[in-house]
Image 1 (tube, one colour):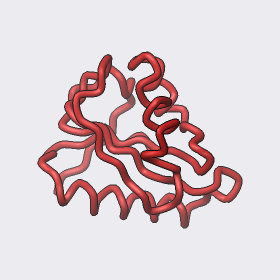
Image 2 (cartoon, one colour):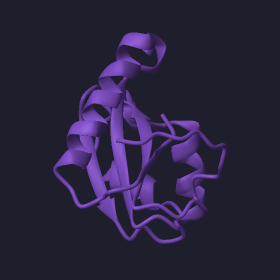
Image 3 (cartoon, helix red, strand yellow):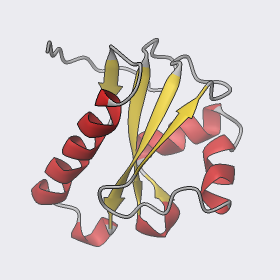
Image 4 (cartoon, one colour):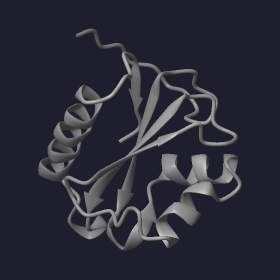
Length: 112
């Protein structure tokens, strides 16, 4: 496994998968909010339908999100925003790695 660090815009990044966080009560993280704006509310609509609630350790893989350069988008539940800490961050990383290992993405960028 190879890692590199860059600072980029999640909506413009060309990758097999972009990983973003969602807090409980369906609150979007900053990166998720940028992608929601780029996709004209696509993520908000997914959340309103109840496909993702933001609870810790949950994931949802989306494909071909409009307005986003990456082929896939992995939503990762971060739990309660007020309780988000290093422990919850580690859980989110583990959940995203597990979800990616079951998919076809070979290159992913995380915005957790």
